[in-house]
Length: 325
Image 1: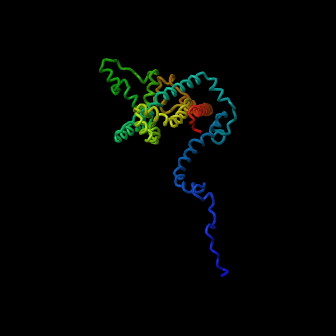
Image 2: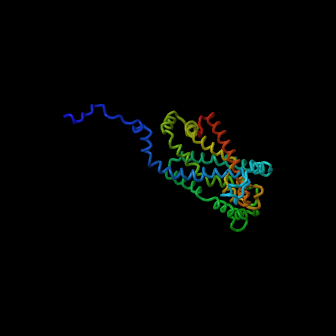
Image 3: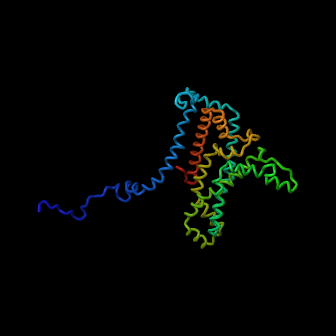
């Protein structure tokens, strides 16, 4: 019959577009739609709280007045005036040096602590002990710095609620105002940082340790390698990429340490000797309402942090062939 369509010959079926084939771009996009939906809130939060505020850096170049135009954006252009103000301020460089010193000390003492705890937990054979220890160690991460500072002030107080001074008094020592001594501020910052973030920092390391092939350890044991040799020859080299990436980000924060931690650990008696750039921006910008000056200092901090990340990333790629980008 003329109107009967001829059946297609074997092998003559319409060719599937490359994008729709398994392995094509459209195929993977459709298959990953649920994952993209889960990712959407995080991307929206990142855009809203990380990228959108970048446009406010424009006020660093203005003689800013909130009443001039919409949100003060009609304020007259001041060029680099605000940058010249803090560059010519000797106290600014004192606080900048103190910021770097605090960040370096926190990095030197707290960064290896998480790695050491992860290595120790990795060697524990009892699963329930490992889980309990890990849970106890990372719970302080969820405690606010307000509470942490309050605990330090309570335990180190000179009145009857001060546990440390009560114990010292039992052994015949005089009570000392530890929190009112600026020389004790940095050690307390280090102790509080380690106590609060020790367990949380081990999560990434433990995840990296779980990806190491167990056959490497088995082969090393057959060859007679001790536990210490297995750690040096297998574990640490396998953790090098993860450690390099975390170290790059940590070095990028050398010029921008934690505001919450320092602000809550301070008190009026030691503030003049413990102020950092973030505290300086808070008092100049929020308290004294010098928004343009504070924005200029913040922009300067951001540029220095960007340069540090680029330098450390380049050095890491040359030394260990590992980098963030």
